[in-house]
Length: 198
View 1: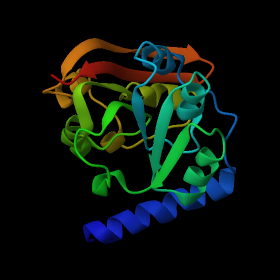
View 2: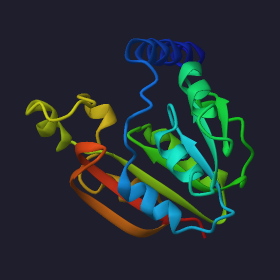
View 3: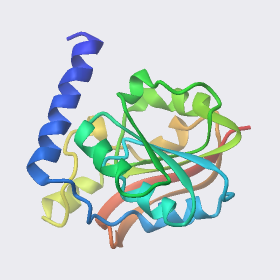
View 4: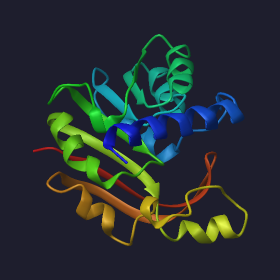
């Protein structure tokens, strides 16, 4: 399968998922992610990668932050863009990101894993910019097996212990954590990092 076909297949998959489940506008954001982002300057420009319908973008926009939501699913991006005037939206496969280098102050990425993208994240960040990243680890399989969460079951989309710390290099890790989290966003086993560009 060519890279172009892979992108089209991904888009079809996610368009169908959003069509089945509706816009999912009531899902809570990760409290940890929002707290870290709100500690950044008010004039920072955020890029929410694979941001879906904007559950993190909306929480930030309501606090006066400007956010660009990027997602491959048109239905999700359209819903995100309509939720707050401080949200801009881009329909794109992040692997073919249309943004220029050093164009954003912060990147938010939650519940999405494509290991090949981490060099791109470093390129997109301005000097001093920050990556805030949270996604599932292999231990999340136990949460799914107990019926307490949905989530990926393929190891392709689950982090190994300590892996996220390595993936964000050469960014400087300021905070790193792996744990079981239970908050308004649900129960999940995740790794999460705050890392800054030199």
